[in-house]
Image (cartoon, rainbow, N blue to C red):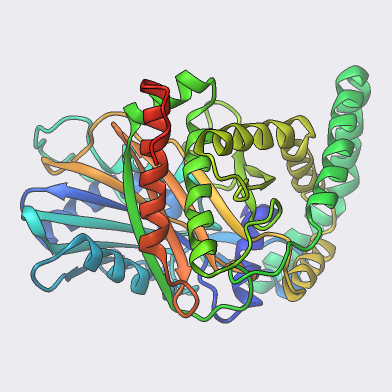
Length: 468
C-alpha cells in the first residue's frame, strides 16, 4: 500500500485546520500558436497518463489516524473532469491571466478525486494561450512537479503521431476500512524493527552517525532560535480565502553574470532581488525595515540523485532573515549570500530532514496529533516563503506548439500573507508572487523593485557603478 510521508500529510492537515487555505501549487506554461482543440488536448494527456499513475489515484485517510493516509485507485476516474478550459476576455493581457490564476488557485481541489487539474486558457494577446497545471502539494514538491513537463511535453517541435495508448491498468478495488486498519496495525508492529534498523546503520558506521548527530543537533538549536516570533508587520497575520498573483521575468544570462562577478549563486541573486521587493513594500507602507523583519522559509531539496521524477515531497528548509535593512543592492546581495551560507553551515536543512525521517519511524497516531496541534497554534515565526526550483533548460513543445514561458505559483498559509516562487526555464528566471487578496496591495511595486535591483546589480557587475 502506497502511503503518504509525514511531510506529504502535513500539507493535507494545513488545509484541514484552516478553512481559507488551499495547498495546491501550480505552474503556468505560455505557448505560441493556436490552442489545441479539446479532443487533441485530451488525446495527448490520455496517451501519457500511464506514465503518471498517481494522476489516477486519490487520498484515503485511515480511520482514527492510526496510519498515514494512503494513495488508492479512483474507480470513478474521469479524465475529462480534470481537463478544463476557459478563455480570457479581449485583449487578453498577462495581468488578466494573473487574475485568473489567482481565482483558480484560491479554490481547493476536490479530496474525493485525484488531486490535480489542468486548464487550457485561450485568448492571450499575441496569438498565445496558456496551460495551467494545478496539483496538490501533498502529491509533489517543486522538483518533481517540473519533471512532469518532461513526461507530458516534447523536446522537439515535430508534431508526432500520438502513441497507441497502452491497455489501461485495471483499477484496484478500494480498500475497506478494516483493511486499512489491519495494514496500519501491521505497520505499527514493525516500528521497533525500523528503529532497530536505523540503530544498526548508525552502529555500522559510527563516525558518520556521530557526524550526522552533531549536524542535526546544531541544526535543531539553530531552527529553535530562528523560530522565535518575528517583529510585527503587515506581512504576517490572518488571511482570507481569495488571492492576488503577479509575476515578472529576469534574463538568466544577467543573473548568471551577476553571480559570477560577485562569487555567489543564482539562488543568492534571486533572493537578493526579492529582498528589494520586500524592502520597497515595507517602505510604501511606512514600516521599519529591521534586520529580522522578513524571516523567510527557504525550501531545500534533499532528494537523492536519480529520484527527481518520484512524486513525493523530498524537501527540508532553511530559515533566513532577508536583509531588508540594507540600502545598497550589492550589500544586500552579499548579506543574502552570507545568510544562506550561515543557515547551511548550522545544519538547518540536515535537522529538518532528520525530523521527517524520525517521524516516519514513530507511531503515526502520535505524529498526526502533533501535526494537528502545530497547525492549530498561531504562527508568528515565518513571515514569507521563497522557493527556487530549476526548471527545464531547453525549449519544450506540446502538440507542436512551443512553450515560450513558464511561471510558478506557491500557496500561502499559516499567517503568511505573501509568498514568492522562482522558476527557471531556458534563458528566463520567472518570479511569481502570491498574496492574500485583502492585505496584498503593492505587488506591482514589489516586482518593479525586483527589476530595478537586478539592473543595479548588473550595472555594478559590468561597469562598477551602482545605478540609482
